[in-house]
Each structure stands twice: as C-alpha cells, then as structure tokens.
Amino acid sequence: MKTVFQPTAGMTPVDTSYCSGCSHGIAHRIIMECLEERGQLGKAIGVVPIGCSINAHHFMNVDMCESTHGRAPAIASGIRRVHSDLSKPIFTYQGDGDLASIGTAEIVHAAHRGEKFTTFFINNAIYGMTGGQMAPTTLIGQRATTCVDGRTVEQAGLPLRMCEMLSTIDCAVYVERVMLNNPANVRKAKKAVHTALDIQQAGLGFTFVEFLSACPTNWGLSPVDALKWLETSMAEYYPVGNFKKPEGY
Image (cartoon, rainbow, N blue to C red; front, top):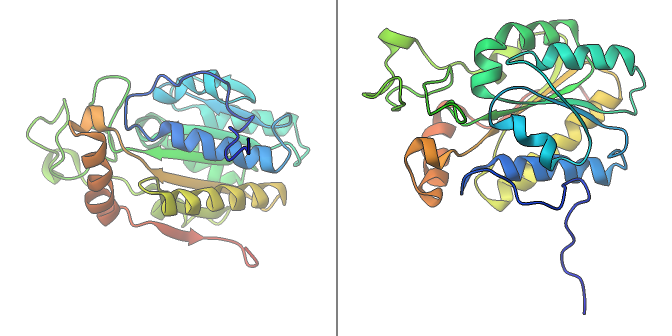
C-alpha cells in the first residue's frame, strides 16, 4: 500500500482540544511542519502565554515554555539571550487578546530591540478561551459578550492593526499577514513561516507573522460560515500580504 500522507513529527499523536472549525490546529501544524522540514524540531523553543494557545505545549512536539499573560516576548527575549546560537529557532505563539492588549508593550519593545525570534500572532478578533469578550482586534459592529450590540468607535476606538503598526519599527525586519481559510492561503501561510524562520536564522532582526483565524464558537457561526466571514469581513479590515521584508527575501 502506498503512503499518501504522513503526519508531521512536529505534532504529538493526540487529538487537539480546540473547538470545531478553530484555526489553531492549522497554525500549529504548518509551524511544526516547517520546523520538521528544516530539521529543527530538536532545537526549537516555543513560548505560549494565557489564552487558547496555552494548550499548545500538549500538541507541539518541541520544547515549550509557558508565560504569564502577554509576557511571551519578554520570556523569548531571555531565552534568545541565553541561546544565542541562531540555528536554534525561538518563537512565541500568541492570540490577539494576549498580544494586542495586555502584551502590547511587550511586543512593541521586543520589535524595537530587534529581538531575534519569531512571533506567530493568531488574530481571531475576540477573546476565545475566557468567554468571547471584545478584544482590541474586534471589528466595528462585531458583537461580543462585552459589547452585545456591537463594537463602536465612540466606546472602544478602532481595532488595532498590529502588522501595520509593527512594520513602522526599523528592527522589525519581516512583517506579514496571512489567512487560514482555504488550502491556497494555508500554503501561502506556510511559506511565510519558512521565510520568517529563514530571516531569524540569518540574524537580521525581529520577525512577525499574523494569521487571520476563525473562532466559530465565539463568533456564533458555523465553521463554514466562519471561514466566509473571515474572508469577507476580517480580510477587508485586515488585508493580507507582506508589509515588510529584507531585500533578497
């Protein structure tokens, strides 16, 4: 019998605990596939904070460290200072409620310092694990448990665009936004992960990949409708594409 598919050794052989239609599992897999293809599973160190991502250490088959809410970039900075060998990839894996709220200062200053690690940012426009509250990335008009009539500019301001903000920082050398809604875009996302890891290994500076991701449970949509909403509503405000990269990449 011919083998047509082999799971990546970067994922542990267990079922994930994420809701049906959640994009976390897709993001996990492509990151781990990239590390396996690069022969770096045994060298990589990941940092995850509070949120749905806190479960990642159960599923990502690399050394993992948990941080307090929003502080993953600080922990990753310390790990990189100790492990200065750039053949050892360091990454943080953070949701939008974590990175764009309590951890905003952490990520901004890590970028300004040009820390040589990669941040994978899961943007599903809502607080997932804690009950569907409004996040800094929640869209105008989008409903959440803390804005039941929909977010307004007057009450909460405009949603934060992290790629656009970080791309203005000199030492943030690679900034890209991708979307996990269909096979073609997943392949583009995987390419972005490889590029970010290439640039990290070259020691050029801080690298950042944002994944537009679905959260059907807290959006109140079916998995299929959530993917449609991701492409129509989220991608309209958060356009996918490369915002910054070094010459030659």
